[in-house]
Length: 285
Ligand code: ZN
Image (tube, rainbow, N blue to C red; front, side):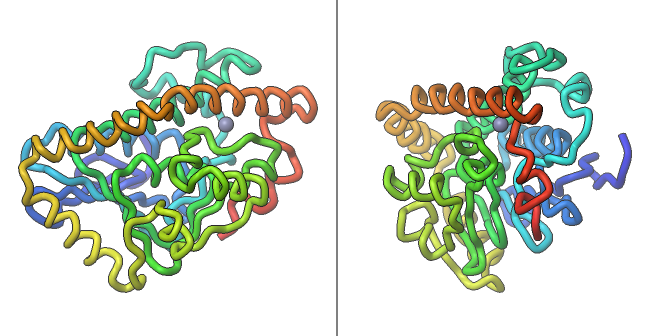
């Protein structure tokens, strides 16, 4: 392992306990605008697990250091499929070292779908504390959380259609925005402001940037006063209602279509995304 580690051994995140019963996980790849390297995603997963297993913790906040919450997947990470041998996987999918669609699908099914579904079902309330930009894959860190608090400077965009891809892997768009706004978001690659996101029902609260952390911590502390078992059951009941509406099946279909778009780009361009966008708008700060 290289780089600086905090007392928990993490390189890319921080783990804090800022109030009784509240854990706060902070994305901390500031120079990379919190782009999701494989290490960051597995460290985040380990931190979520640690908070879930700690019986003194009732609520988990996910925040970020730096100017932006997350610029999405780390498209500059090299050797990511080979690096899978360094991590304990969360699913049963296999073939990470395979060529073509097989290796890509294995990696994304494990890293993007597998982790997100796990985080969505953590048996404790989770709150995303969001500021700055959330770009494409960045949404997969926000949407699995139960509540979203955004500062007034927060923006959300899924520009994957501009890259020749059929939407970010954790395809929660219709459930977060409603069908029409989800389509507009995907078709246009337009930025959605925090205020708009709140109007669509995607965000619970929009607050001034300077008040974001205090507001979120206060919300977390108030929830943490409730009986944890009742919180767990209430969360599971709402998630079951959404899955009963077809979310889980739709997610599998959209993931397969996403893989088809990667496979098409590989055949036409030799890359999983359209090459014109690789050095363009993806990771601008
Ligand atoms: Zn993908």
